[in-house]
Length: 361
Image (cartoon, rainbow, N blue to C red; front, side, top):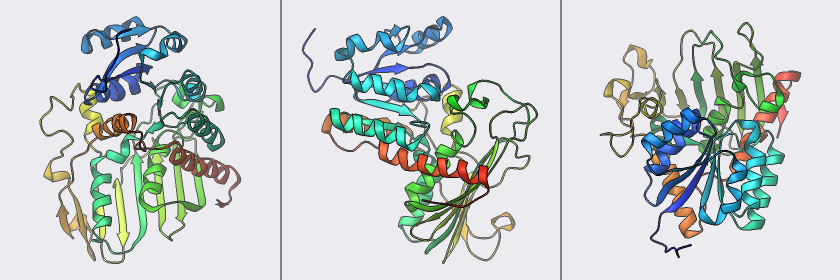
């Protein structure tokens, strides 16, 4: 094999080419300086044709087991397969000597996540979790408002990831089989809990309500989580597929002002429609009509407050951070320990919803 230099791009193997692999990971990997999509693992011929059309020259493997024998020809493996495969495939990759990115959730339990983290640390390998919503436009804007002190002392954080999907779509995400690690608590809950912890630090108390509302549904499709953070902030988090009228994405109340933001970051929709960061002008930018408002004393719906320009969303920053960590040996943009803390909350929320209790962490 030809000797490689530090100028050569890092070669990425991508396991899975469904929604996560084709819409998020492959385009973002290819948009990152210093990374190249080398191999896609899928046995589906239609998905192979889709990948081949966008990434000429990409190699294919029919199963993850075909990757491990030539691990020395890869520099990173990304696990974008169904949730139940995350732990076994990440374990196999680490044992093969490969750094790993795993789509959220990292595991079905915090204990499994910490076992993976320990294995990666023991082998001296990067293990990171794809939490792209930390680079949503509204999240970046809110983080800046908090850092600048424009809200005063934050007292309550309301975050909603709501949809109106009265009909089931089917598939493992809506399965009631616990081994599939499906349901909204693990799906959208992984995002909204991670964002709350990233903004306000560890939670010490968890209360949750989780329901299965749609006819024929087997997994939770309407969930509420209340967190008390160690610093006193209270987070109220909503994840639902049954919301006929959507609430604000964020409502954040502080001692000096509040911030209200409606609508979703535009990056996922752009990726689904074939947009790419390298070729789309003004990537991650939303129209002024969707800007949030900051103020006190009057509802933004009746003109209260002032508009806050929304910062551009920046999903490409995640893989840029992964590439830098691989080159420099530094901290990845999202750590396995952070993912385990999110899973601590998710597990506590499951217990709370099931038993009707508040759980202390």
